[in-house]
Length: 148
Image 1 (cartoon, one colour):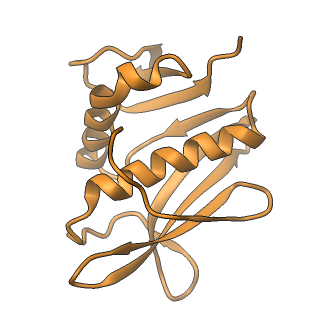
Image 2 (cartoon, one colour):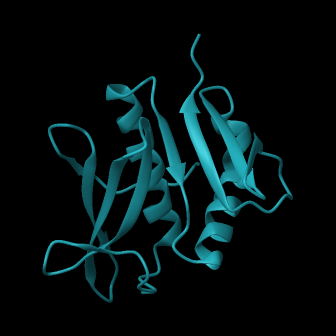
């Protein structure tokens, strides 16, 4: 992704990242959080959204801060940072809405050639896991490092 990203801060365990989405309109605190699945702690769910006053993440809010590409580029950078500490683990991405899942699919399709050397990206379709193919619609995505 040839788009600049925001500077972000990381928790010491590398499972939570925060950054400011900034535009002429406002600043919004964003959070990317990787949470291990209880049934399989080597798979981490990627949660992403706006930080609410109570410390929770709102992954349903729609705010047009005119920086979507930069925000998504930042999320991609947090994925690479996550893998620096968790190289053998897998990230699960499920959009909180159908339109968000579609957005993630578009971003993956647009950048797959760039990421293919480093990341293995699979799609979840009809409950089955398959290699990601541009043009296919998926319910979610699994991403892991390609190990040499």
